[in-house]
Image 1: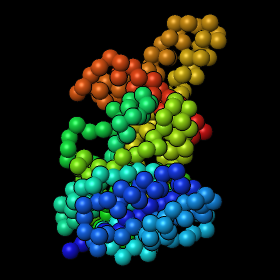
Image 2 (image 1 turned 180 degrees about the horizontal axis):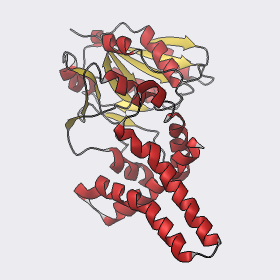
Image 3 (image 1 turned 90 degrees about the vertical axis):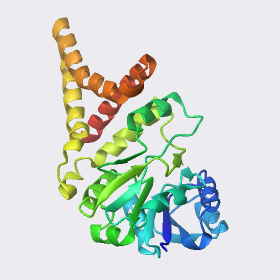
Length: 305
């Protein structure tokens, strides 16, 4: 009988933590088979007081430089056989662990979970970007799993070396690539976590993607180059170089050349958006996602610079 340790990294999460913990305590799963660990990263709000009021295990840490270090600190005190990494701004459905339990004893699986879904009242930015990452398959293998809703057997986590504490972001991608040497990574949409703090505006979306892009290249030195990383590594540079070329041509009055460079920049973006929307194609969704992907590549290019 496997025991589960749910690790929640937190820093000034007073706005969201109560709902997260309430959803975990409402699980239809035996109370004696899971523990909740809040790893607090030097919060200055009421995060610690909220966690202690729920009688969960609280790890008090001085402020760390990366969320990877906070997650590793929570894992270090976990007593369960399965480690679960869940963000404090998420809630889960009552059958969350019941659905996940089917993978607890799978020796061929090194990691499992699913991409978090958005709240029912999500903004157009949330709804549109969800189109880019949702899957039409219920269960499938993938190359990496988001740490917002990530399950890993503890022995495999320890063998992998855990999260890379030098990475500011993309630490889940880096860890996932190292986990693949121990088994499959499975995404199962029945393991539902709802993320309540996805970017809700274009400004928030740009800021988050610029932040996430900071560690894209740093991760290469830890896990090596992966083919499926190429779009997020190369396309931002390609996209931005052509946009700058288009702008330069425009300033010099070479309007045809400016249009050519602009269309060359848009071609791979338009193809990518079509591939993301083709199974349920709607014109409105296509153009909204096209706008967001343009912002995405600009943000990632800014992060690289």
